[in-house]
Image (cartoon, rainbow, N blue to C red; front, top):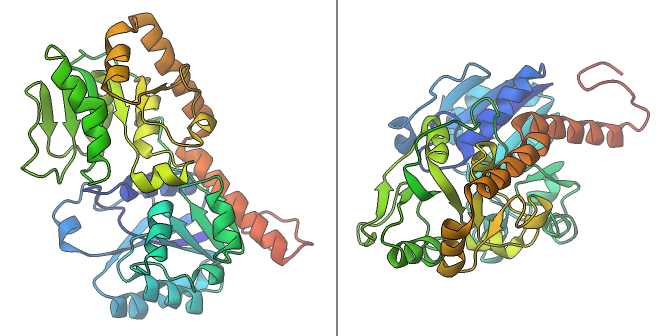
Length: 367
């Protein structure tokens, strides 16, 4: 297929999880023989932090305005077999309206922030998606699975809502024998709703265990935060350093945004990255977590600092390694970027079959 993606960013991973997701998905689509053009809005905060300015696995084009997008890339959008608009794309509503009007192929919306998106719609906040657009997209791809897919179809009128979870590249994330620098680490950009559970599950544990070694990596944390003395803060950790980070800690902490917890079925890319490195995960709980990893066998659930400290101080080395290895096996079997690329193509095939029930050719071939 010839695929055009209009996403938040693929060139810069600074302060967002979109770039990592798009890189893995597009790389695998390219490996499977599909051609991808990625259109990205040129904004100053990414321009100064581009860690992959020219991806070799796709054609990447920057545009400075909606007018430039329309005038420079109408033909690409019109001729594509599939056009995907991502969440948080600047001026996402007029971009989506233009895509729906212009594209002849499959028109899809890829929501990397589904619960956040629906919460915004409930508030009348149409920053990058309007309820009227949802029925016009042929396909709604969601980072969140479970009941929210029924909401998208039944309440908002999506013709077809399907999960397309985040994923990892096993060539980038794998176990390494490194010196253990920290007993527990956390990787994530600051957010108001994640800070209370971070304090509850990690920082309070650090206060109660002065001999423990802890680390938080991520940008945008306010200067007013008083980190415990045994908690190191790393301002920004590029994706190229994530594997080393996970392999340098005995356990890693996963914290889920409030909207994601409420919706359930919302695994984060950090969850899969850590698991692929066989680093045992301590996580908050959300509905559907057990459909991704088995609690107590592949992941550990913490409700407070006491739970966290029990895991850190009482689980022996052999059991810790077993938990990590089981989680890695699960990720490699179900949650790589190659799996996501195949799922995306299967959804396209499903749509094409619905449009032409007599079609039996492969995607991209003449019927």
